[in-house]
Length: 412
Image 1 (cartoon, helix red, strand yellow):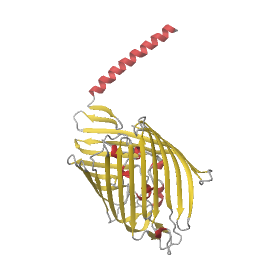
Image 2: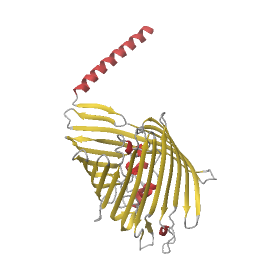
Image 3: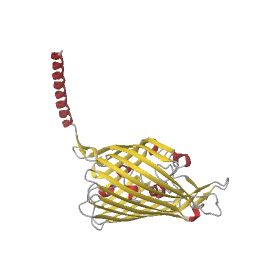
Image 4: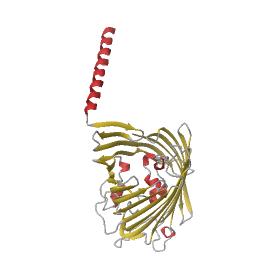
């Protein structure tokens, strides 16, 4: 019996060795080069440099709980789901100057199913998040055509896979200008960057567009020079900047004849409106310490649209929001973080003599985060404690809730 086992082991080892050598020889004959890069996935480059493709995937598995109130800890709801499941392809064709970027989403909670119920121009689930072609005119100037994120507040532009909390703040979810389809141009130097966009205004995957367009411009000032590679595109100071790094930024967005309650997101309005968004944000990082501050403001002259046949209304959250995040990354790659986020509606959104039923609430979120980075943002364990306050400004009452979220992020 032992002799048979020994023969089988040796035979298995021999076959495995032969297979390994044959595989190496076969791959060496292929007209492509395979490589892997930290947090950049798998890259395939054609040997004649006419084509490249970088492949990445990531998923966020989440469990969450929210109480009925601060005193009543009975569960109001639980959240058990795949929050995000994404696949990303990027690279170049013919010449490294001609690039492409495609990102697809597959989890139900990541495809905006709810939005399709209230929109005639977004009637299908949004599998396609990004689909652009680009041209690098120089090291500083880049042109983009297709569907991708508008150059809005930094937290929106940062990938959801690079967040230090389980999700973006209520400030972003309320006032974001999100993704849109059109033309983009970025100019990036050592101490400043200018980013612009001329887009449709209807948001991602829309089936039609009206005569109004969406105009966006952003300026970023970097008084101490650029951050370490990619460190301004993620939350937390994982690069442990050796010298102080600061970014002071502002975005202005004007959506002409917007037809959705969030401009590029939300329910269809009963009539189009002109919408203005102002985003201001500041980012500072140094030796594991990170500080982020943002202020978002949306203004619409007539934010309440009405169906004259039945009297129903669709309103736009008009007002402002503020976010503060502070964090420190220890040398063992454990990070502690704190967040305060607040959104407040304009007074006519809760105290309106004509539309007395309208009563949009003020919200405040206080959150504590603990993250263990096992392989940067590609593999991390996240725990968040939540304290949410919803204030009824019209009736001078409020509701307080407690919650917790545990999330695992994994990807390549």
